[in-house]
Image (tube, rainbow over all chains, first blue to last red; front, side):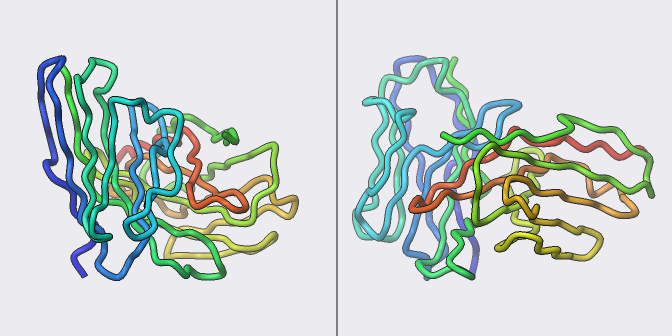
Length: 117
Length: 111
């Protein structure tokens, strides 16, 4: 078990460019989540997959954002036409379908830090 | 979404001191989770609490799920420099798989 892996760890881009982040969850976890974290704030939920199905999306996920999990394993988060306000840490997390006592305990990756110039 | 109020926002303590922080909400929840985040890394789970009144320890860390189910406390005993970081409380609401996080308590330990 290598934990949740995210790539790239850092990305600097110019405003208007597209960026894509990849997340490889813990192999036996069928749930995968994307969160965004800005300075001084806690992580904020963006979207959630169970296997390949995207089941929840936050209103924070504008139409410039798209997430996929085509085979129910790794996931990608793409941001099109980036804006300076998109600068943040993008965190991926995964969880098993049956957690202890029914609670949903997430294991996070190290994150992908995006800086939009 | 539900608001979690975490306090204090930040604290500076001497190495060896005990630390206490808390998290409150206006709503009732079934689970409280405490995470720690080091600079440039993702949050790491410290303690998970599953029922009201539960008191759980993990080494020098102790957390309690408030009886009203609207609050939780995290205590760190005999702090050491590696305790530095941001501590987040989080919960999941009924019927939802997303976690809602507080804004965090930033802990600094002075050697």
